[in-house]
Image 1 (spheres, rainbow, N blue to C red):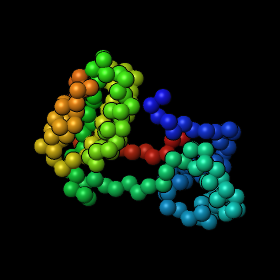
Image 2: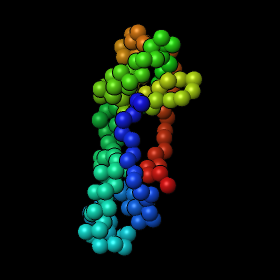
Image 3: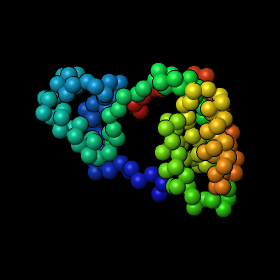
Image 4: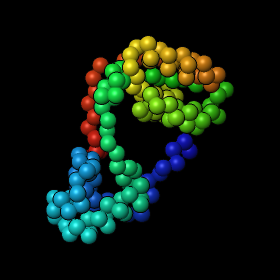
Length: 160
């Protein structure tokens, strides 16, 4: 399997867990005491639940979402990638290689016409073209690419 970060959930999430996830999804920096107060449970209970959600890999990480344009990365693109038929054994290595590039924000492994969508943030269209040429077109495993420029996007955050 390509993604080894499977959720290990020996029990169903209850309403309190779902509320914790909803609040953390909106504000990952909320203090444990404020989170507990919003959910209506004791801080020690809340901390135990959050730790359990992390242990079960329901919560995968706590991170700051940085605006790419603040770093001079004014252009985002979604690049559809199809690997050559004989290169299907390279799916995991392609995913790993893409994750190592600082321009790559996300990589999606797909079922369908394309194998991957690679989400990049770069300075400008020249940098996007260079990424495609140097990292994708020159890769012997890659059959085709199709680049779409992102004009705007909406990120909902937590699921549910």
